[in-house]
Image (tube, rainbow, N blue to C red; front, side, top):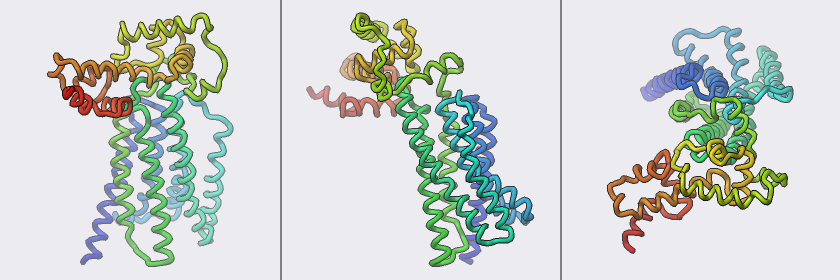
Length: 371
């Protein structure tokens, strides 16, 4: 009875897992929010290819055992799962990315895999090698994706004052979860092969199901990362990170104008308060300063020792401090204080305020009230 229960539970989880991936793939490919089009196209392909790992089992449970040709075609597609995820991240980071000859290197492992898979129809050793490649092929891509996103997260702070829902942190979580789960899966298969054979993979499927729901939640909450205007997008994409700018010794502002522009920027921030705009980016502030984005970035990096994100949020935190200490603003909630200071959410407000003051907004207010 217990074995039957677990088999039925396994079937239920498999159906949820496969169905969830196919449905999410369809939604992402349709892209109803019309954001990050090229990135979401490849992310939708990733979800579709990923679902194929469970398709054959689902068909068997439904009494529709696939023939050898269909099985071969499905397994041939699976090798593109990490490749599609990789290019999804590439287009999230740079929607204007153009394919290059170097990208053909991504086909080397799939070709080797196809050869082994084809020979594996009559050679068990070749088939086992193909299955090992099918799983292990994911790991180097996941590592590369992780570091590409980390570099992107530094870059996005050079052009945006609010990184919530555009910093791809959800993809970091997805890749880390995938890495851990794949490692566990490999260990589990070795355990099955050499220690104790278990016919069910219930635990692994539940872990993958959890990842599917987490990725669905975050992928459907995406915002457009860059402006739709191609010229503006190209300008922002060309801005260097703080470290890259420091390494580049080229002067973009004459020494005679540098101090005047610094003072002008301070006056602008204090009088016009552009930081109250929750969607303020480098391009908007550059227009107010009548500079191009490279000159403004140069001014911030060399004149204030800060990137755009740090510079703007410093003023937002200062504004929040004033409101928290203003007795006439006691009717405002913490969310109200956040919005009045230019933050887009309470979570972002708390995180940045704590990082800059070593106190949460509530702690700061309480400390002030006891003085």
